Image 1 (cartoon, rainbow, N blue to C red):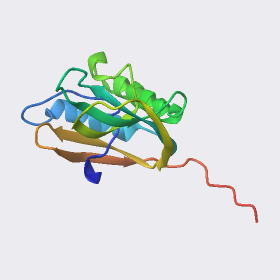
Image 2 (cartoon, rainbow, N blue to C red; image 1 turned 180 degrees about the vertical axis):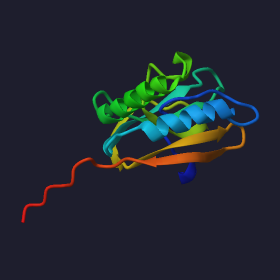
Image 3 (cartoon, one colour; image 1 turned 90 degrees about the vertical axis):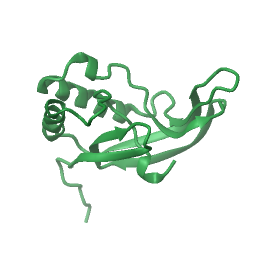
Length: 156
C-alpha cells in the first residue's frame, strides 16, 4: 500500500458516484471545524485478515489493535460521531461499531492473527477524505489540526 493511502476510517459518509453532495460536504466541514480535541496516541499491534475466506477468494490484510490498545482512538471516533450528530448527520452515517484498523493490502490471501510489536504515533490531525473507489486514490477535502489545550510543564 502506498504511504499516501494509509489511513484509519473513522466514519463513512456514503458512496457517491459524482462526488460528495454539497449538503453532505457542508455538514462534514461543519463537524470537522467544530471538533475541539487534543492530540492523542494511536497503537496498532495485531496483523490480521478480513474477508475472503473461501477457496480462491482474496481479502484484506490489516494492522489492527488488540483489546485496550486503541482506547484513545476509540474516544476520538466517538467524539467525532457525537459532533456529526449535533451537526445534523443521520444515524446511518455515524459508525456505531468501530473496529480500528489500517488496511495494508486489499487483495491478499488470508493470514492468521499475529501479535506484532506495536506501531505507535501521536495523531496530530484528522482529515475529510473522498475515497475514489476503483481508482486507488484518496482526495483530501479538508484537514484539521488537533491542538493541546495546556502547555507542557517544563521543570527547570
